Image (cartoon, rainbow, N blue to C red):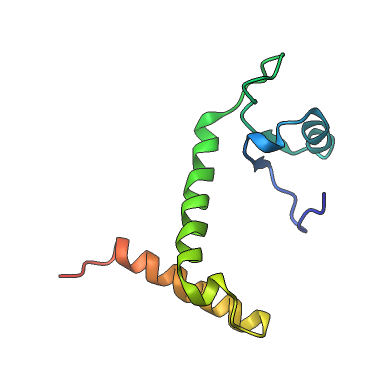
Amino acid sequence: MALPVNKPKAILADKGYDGDAVREALLLQGILPVIPPKANRKAHIPCDYRRYKDRNRIERMFGYLKHMRRIGTRYEKTALSFASFLNLAAIRRWLKDFVNTT
């Protein structure tokens, strides 16, 4: 796995990544895997569901961004302009929730 420069403390993933090889690779690098076990797993592995709930917020944000056609189809030619439109979309989402509109 290619990791960013700053090593994360934990990685949130869905049940598709519930494999012994993935878990072992993360633990060897000192990263806590927060992955719920599959239903057919023989040995139960505990999962921090409190921390796993944050993954849902991230998934909802990606879903919101994909509904914006300009970002979903990536019309921008450069990485800077694409990142700028991502920032604008995130600000637009944030303003709706945190600013009084009356």
